[in-house]
Structures are given as C-alpha cells and as structure tokens.
Length: 207
Image (cartoon, rainbow, N blue to C red; front, side):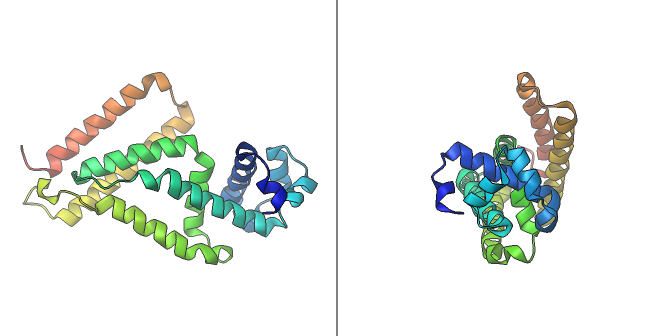
C-alpha cells in the first residue's frame, strides 16, 4: 500500500480492505475484479491505484491486514486455562462466533488464505504459525482425566470436534437463512448448553 492509504483514518482503511477481502474470497485472486471492488467500496478506480500499485499489492495488503487483525483480535483471546476438552471447544467456539459475526469479511478471507497457493507463498509460514497456534489453543492444558476410561481419548476428541463442526455449520446456515435474533441469544446458548451436557454424559466419567 502507498503512503496516501496509510494516511486514511482506520475506518476508511478497514472499509476498503474488507471490501477487497470479500471480492478475493468469493472469486479468488485471478478472477477478482477491481471494478467490483471500487463499486462496492464507493471509490473511483483512479483512487484505488492512488492507494495501491496494482491488484497484486492490494491483495497482499489485504492478506497482511487480515492476518494481523485475526491474530491480534482473536488468537490473543485463546488463553489455555485448565479445563475439559468439551469446555475448551465450547469456549473457543463462542469466541470465534463473536469474532466471525463482527468481522465476517476478515474471517472468510483468512479461511481463503489457508488454502491459497502461488501468490501467497510468502504467507505460508504465517499460515503454518496460525495453524500451530490454533492447535495449541485447542489441546494445551486440557484435563484428560475427565474422559471415561473405557473409551479411546484421541478417538473421543475427534468425534467431539466433528460434532462441534457440524453444529457450527448448521447454525451458520440457519442464521444466514433466518437472520440472527439478538433477543434470542440466551435461547441459542441454552440450546448449545444442552448439547454440551449430552456430550459430557457420553464422554466423561460420572461425577
């Protein structure tokens, strides 16, 4: 990015970069259109190139911003306090849901970067660090003694992870179709709590 872009206030920078992220996430680098980006961002094409050298530097700037924002505002909250595996995934899921709801373009673009090839080769080490940090947050300091002794713990954790992934996808599809009724947030979490109680009965020792 050029100096004039850095002089914009944070909200303007965020708007332009997240607009570009949405386009790159939806179409990939090669098929992304700078015309669609400027139209969605409400700026002229000349102004876009006043801020960025070309499409490639715009893409790399969005990648740098997304990575920094994701690690600063999300991963920094992934503290590894002592807790059960089900409780760990529940807590991380809530944190991720809040972040993804507040910053959907960044969340989608970071997902895109996980699988991007070629242009983002300079970011492969960063993506690897991101993966390692996520795994660390998922497993570090988990209380394994809570699991039943008659089941394989590794297999149980995989099954719990699949359950969480399926639930999150189902809720994302529901919210996309129906919208989020913020007056019903307590109801959503009460339902989620019911699923957690069921998983505890399946995988944990009786207290």
